[in-house]
Length: 337
Ligand code: PMP
Image 1 (cartoon, rainbow, N blue to C red):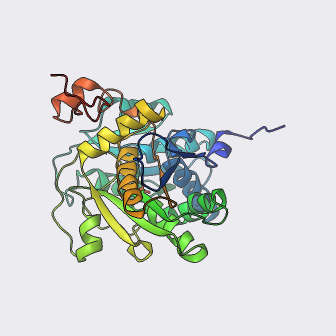
Image 2 (image 1 turned 90 degrees about the vertical axis):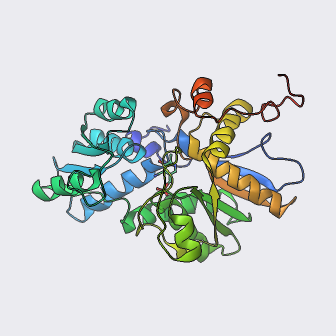
């Protein structure tokens, strides 16, 4: 019998798969860990389930308790899934720019969603992070997850994502790992694991153009963040879940390259993934070209494309935002127009 006690036991042990079409000849191989196949659809399921367990052990979350987090997406889905199974209440705060589908998906799990104005400064009491903190402070028995600054976020990826990739590769028989940087948890947890167990592997962060992580790594100064469209990676604040001491290099990637590559992953590799998967693979292919044949680069595909069907996976949306692929990128050598 291969029966699992509940759906949380289906988190992780995702397949590691070779990319065959989007990697040019003469480059290293690129292998991807399919995190979009986790039960609530993203890599954040790992962190959500792990943090809920740690909070229970630490006595911060008791039966019937309340989980509070500022989240616009995948973390909310993972926490809501865990809460549904374990009988916790959830309150999530999110800015009003987030899609109705995201709000409604969380509500479908039974979570309460509080919508806050997007256009307010970080220190405003109306800012979604401050609203979440205040609810957690004011509600007895509430546990504030605080993914941006939690050591447990890093630990989750150390114990699961990092360990699994190590085991998937016969003890780290590959050359470089690329991880997109949102909270920083993935790259920091995987990075720590490999610095301890297989330091030959280079750890590289992929940051969207407009986010602060790239500059913090290279210049140690906090730049002004600007708007970008890829969801789930990039930040406008310094995160304590981002441990640059285990990162060897940071690369930048723009929206267009991310979306074009994510669409190629769907169309050419049959992997129905989100935009940050495109960011990660775009950077992984760059590294693969630099390393050349005989080497292997590994990255993660963080979330499922079903969240983006009306966004970058839609041709009209791409056109409206000026991201449309050239005929060459679509596989036609000659221009047809
Ligand atoms: N991609 C997506 C779609 C995400 O939701 C996240 C989580 N914010 C990431 C990548 C990056 O993960 P991390 O927060 O661990 O840096």
